[in-house]
Image (cartoon, rainbow, N blue to C red):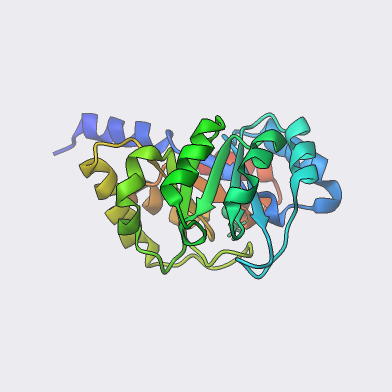
Length: 231
Ligand code: DX5
Ligand code: ZN
């Protein structure tokens, strides 16, 4: 029997997810053009990958670049810290223009305090877990978070292959959020394509970080629209 309301709810839900292009694989020789491309698209956020070459085996960019991106971007900055000891710099990331700030569970000695500080600074706090980290560890802080970022690749590089075991992890996290009566968002990051987006929406994902799929597309603006309106 065809459930019309169920179908409408699902299709409404399908268009409710957010897209956050990650500039890690963008053309850095034309970074302003890339940010303006995202401005002109249906993207909801701009995802910035901050890497220190210590927590992850890659190095990206610091505060001067974030400030310059902020001066051009018309989308909120979703800043993903893949750095050791993020507590050192929370104020600076806020001052540089971060709107959403994600720290890795594995890099925080006093995670609850770090989350509090991010909120006190006026940013939306999020915690990211690596593929080997159990989401159950976040249960004590779930209600304090705007979002949980589930890494669907090992952090450090764009263009990697999606880790299939992520689906079970996302479903487990979704149930935890429901059980807690929280409205914490779920974000995925790494290996997102038009092929796995639909299944991830069904699994409960709210926000999609998309790097290579967008920046290697012949028409990135059209690709973002395809991701916003999957059929
Ligand atoms: C990887 C970064 C991701 C990456 C996503 O460590 O956190 O944001 O840029 O890129 P794709 O979508 O190319 O896997
Ligand atoms: Zn990222």
